[in-house]
Length: 127
Image 1 (cartoon, rainbow, N blue to C red):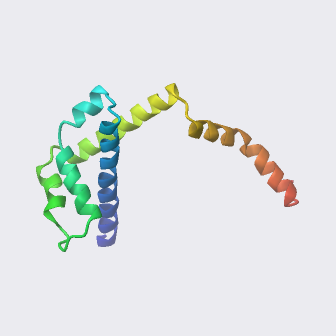
Image 2: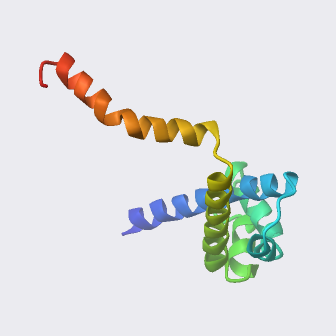
Image 3: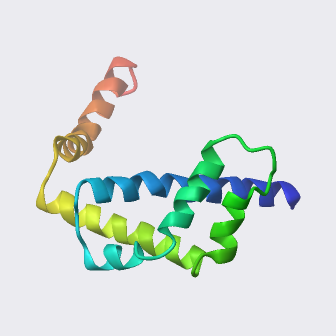
């Protein structure tokens, strides 16, 4: 049980910390979205400190940078979940409206996968 808790905590810390570069990119790109902008009005400073606590050395396991977000943040788990979902929603809508080469490559690879599998099977003498 203790091992599962530690693993869950590590995943949560990584998720929360990796959300900050998305926030920074959002602001640097000067994007706007009502829901995202509303969510960014709280907890962002604490998230910045939390990220520093995750990715920079500190001698204590429960450094204040970790604890501030958890103790002083406003509904942190719900906030992170909503912010992640809002970014996902925005990215999906943006991608649909502005297809990128990455999206096009993905669609092409999905379309040709059956043919590639057949060719490989034929080469291996299984088709």
